[in-house]
Image (cartoon, rainbow, N blue to C red; front, side, top):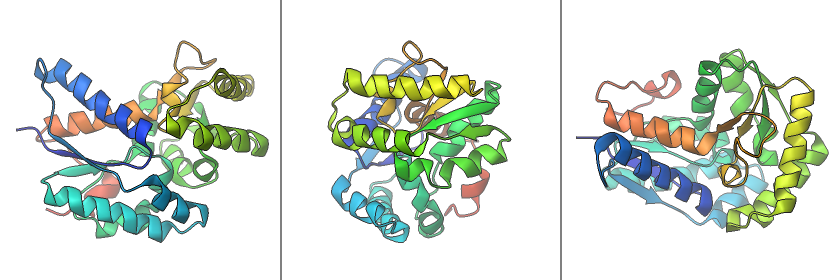
Length: 244
């Protein structure tokens, strides 16, 4: 039997895209209408953001663990969080988790390495691009990482939190991202990481100046492969803390 996937959600459109990807691509691997069992818990985003905005990552971890405990009781075998920003709470959360996790930044770095990218531009919330989540994973993969400027971070952040988390995707937002990605290209990047889970609903390979690394779908695909492989190992970071 495939393993049961638990999704710890924060913002709605990104979590929906992750779930939808598991469902659609599961059918391609398992047969018509088929996919691993999936359960999702979504504590209101407002509660997460209260803690994120004050930089209280232990409090974010507590909220994630609240979801994790509920999903464990529902029978999930492992967990994913399709929200890049919340991964900053992983060091506080994983050691206390009732279940093992996959890490979105690790999956993106793994795909960047597989495709031979050497220098990747990072897009996401200001909390993410100013935090350690992606620098740590990309440094471990020996891949360069370029960040938006302070002004670009603020503009991207406004579009994410005032529009995209509500499912609104405008030409103005697309233009903002395209300008940032074009600058990454001029400065030597060979790919861009779409590392807010709503960004892939706006930016893709057809409208991006650079090849894209879709963090949402990459995490969903990693979860699907994990669920379908009885011999799949956890990432080294999370294997130590996995409860068996």
